[in-house]
Amino acid sequence: MANGTIAFDTLQTSGQIKGSAKSLDTDYLAYGSTKVWCNYKADSESINGSLNLTSVSDFATCNYGYNFTNNMADDDYCPTGYIRDGSDNTHLRCVQSTDGSNFTTSQLTVRPAGVNASDYLTNFDPLDICITIVGDIS
Image (cartoon, rainbow, N blue to C red; front, top):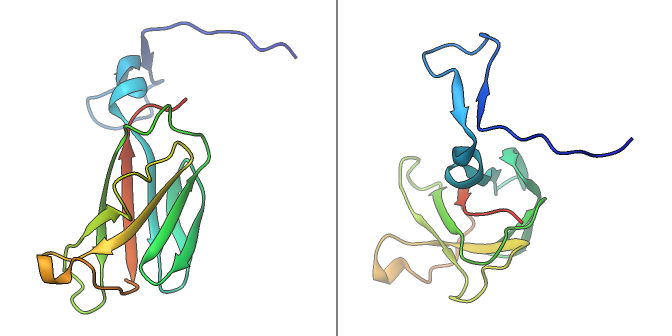
């Protein structure tokens, strides 16, 4: 079977989507949507849900690698995250890169970061780590 190209500017549904938004500009798909997301249950090392993710590597206490199914186009993407740390189920913590240079096109390595300077380097394994990445896929 030969592969081909389909060119279009807008996707429309057949009416099965609820709500008023029944079309989507293709620029949004290419440039404005999430390219990777993951809800990872760190205490049981299981993925609750994900998009464009093959696995999560548990390198050590407080050090996780998110492995992408489809590589990012470059290392200039924008990751964000949330961590539930177990001591307070509503406690928001940041997800940070393990150093300033390890955004790669195939994996993001992160660790939990505290909410103030004294917590910044505290090692702990949280209950849940959720990440979202916006950027271009290659």
